[in-house]
Every structure is written in structure tokens, then in C-alpha cells.
Length: 157
View: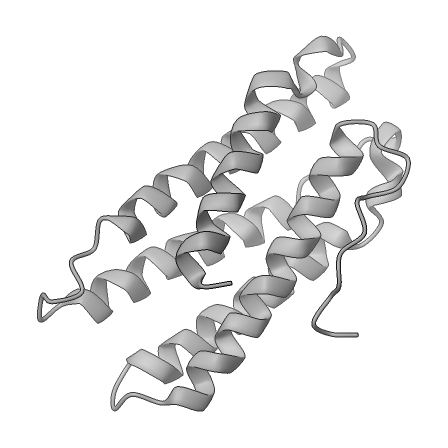
């Protein structure tokens, strides 16, 4: 699956969360967390649009991509610090793992595109990016009340 397809899947999942997610719960901590997660997914969607709008033929395309990925990394880092209410305790370390993998992905993308092209770094970046997204999909399953996230093969395994 190419990067474009992965991004489209992530955006579809985001829309599902926004349309059917957390708004039904009234407790303050729970409502705050749901609002934070909705903003997180809105920001991811915005950055996705930015990435998809980059013209690869432009001389500054790599810089635009890396800048967008840096923003994505920042919002993943912020998300990992949200206080998870006990109703979603099943998330465990998923937010921190997702942020860690996104950080590794962005670092590798910088290695791949920040100077002379590095194919191995690009491959590694893609692997880390996929691991981050798997964890985000697990988190969405938990947010939607699924007792067990849909089974996926984690490239780490």
C-alpha cells in the first residue's frame, strides 16, 4: 500500500470519529478528551490535505513535505500527552507508541529527503509511519467502544 492510500485510509477513519465519536458522553474529563481527540484528527486531516496538495515537480516540494510532516509530528506529540480518561484505559501506551513511531518516521523522512535522496531512509520512514497509523486505528477502535481492535499485522511483529 502506497503512502497516498495510507493517508486516505487515515482521513476516512478521522471522518468516522468526527461523525460518530465522542460527543455523546457528558463527563468533563471524558468530554475534554473527546474534544482534544477530535481536534487532533481535524489537524491530521488538514495536514493530509496539505501533503496531498504538494506538487512533486516543484523545486521546494521536499521542503514543503518535511514541513508538513514536522507539523504532523508535533500534533502526535501533543496527543500523546492528553490525559486519557479511565473509560478509555484500554489504550494503555498506544498514544505514546504512536507518537514515538511518528517521530521516528519524520526523522527518517528528513534523512531521506533533507539532502541527497536516501532510499533506505525512505523505506524505514514508511515502516515507522505505518506503525504509528496502526496504533491510531487501534485507538479509534477503543474510542468507538470496540472491546478488541480490529486485527492488523504490525510491521514490528
